[in-house]
Image (cartoon, rainbow, N blue to C red; front, side, top):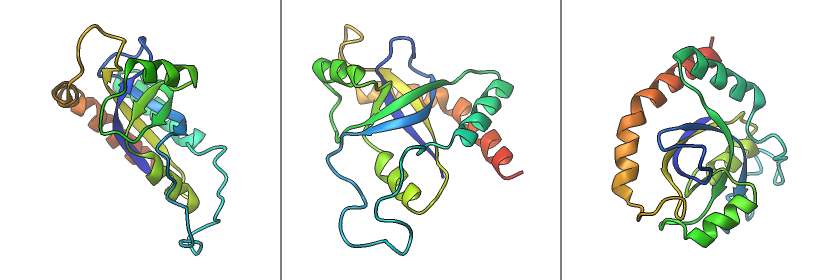
Length: 167
């Protein structure tokens, strides 16, 4: 499974418009898709999550980005419930926990995919700096505008990645 998402950058060195290869995550959404009695026919109830984000897929993605002429960052994705942007205090906390980017999606799908034995890669698009890293309010329009600017770069990387994975 190759997933993408839009995130806020918790790292001042990762500018809006940057791409981040997720290496791990913090599930702070207060839920897990594997709770309850279901889906055991797809995989173990307690799947190992020590290598959730496949190192080989990340290596292919990094190589594809390099061949396309742009860089990608490695990072840890903090999944929060949303739908609001984080407060400056939450941003400081997430950084102290080791997160690089923050978003409101992706982790439940990743957990379910790993439960089913899939290899997973996630490309996060850093759409904006997180609250408190800039002296202005954050807006959803900013996320949409940055997404339009980076769409070509993400599409190029996804195309190369899919092509190389299925060679």
